[in-house]
Length: 307
Image 1 (cartoon, rainbow, N blue to C red):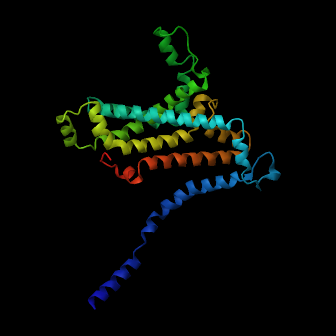
Image 2 (image 1 turned 90 degrees about the vertical axis):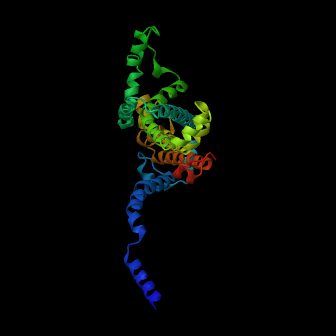
Image 3 (image 1 turned 30 degrees about the horizontal axis):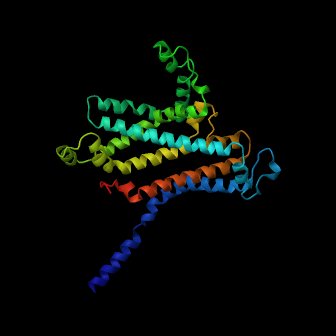
């Protein structure tokens, strides 16, 4: 009899308690409104004809013709390759440099805290402003040319922004790295400080120093953090627009630039939406590849094994 009454009381108490889903409902609504709704709206727009100077045909269902027009355009292949090149170079350089600087800052040298505070300044600058800053620095009258000319390293100013696009991408990666490096360094540094000191001491007693300790002790501990940084930077590089646009003036064509141009310069919102969907699918594939390499449970738990 007591057991039955306790069960009844428990059911009544649970029925009066709010469902846990109610607590996450506001977050789900916000994510749905600002993420899912624009994505599905872009998909629906990519399937109709939406040219602002042809108002009589706006909303006409055309199926996959917008995608056919985009893929068959004169700029798509080059823009897609440029986007992948920019992403691969920026992710590789940013992750590599961030790892090296995080290892240096992890040595707890004098003045490290000051460096950590100062290096957050570039991360706080908006990407469009960062692009303009580096555009002016790479100009023929910029301080980069001024320093090298005054030092006699080269005799006359070098026109960085008139270099071939294959060279300009390196300059754009420098601007991207300058802004994104602080976040990556702090994330990797936070994980480095989670490595137990006894393991480091044991590795030193076993003779593992320098590159040996980095390969067999440090990297197994931080490989999941590196995957998170690489995934985050890949998403930023694939979808970046403002920084590259203000830096190169739109001359270095990425897919994100042409999505903007199709909509707001050429007035074809159907083509712009199709480009946005293609870019979103590409970004999703990159994320899936990273999750395939390192399972999600390791990404969230920061696995401390060398498996």
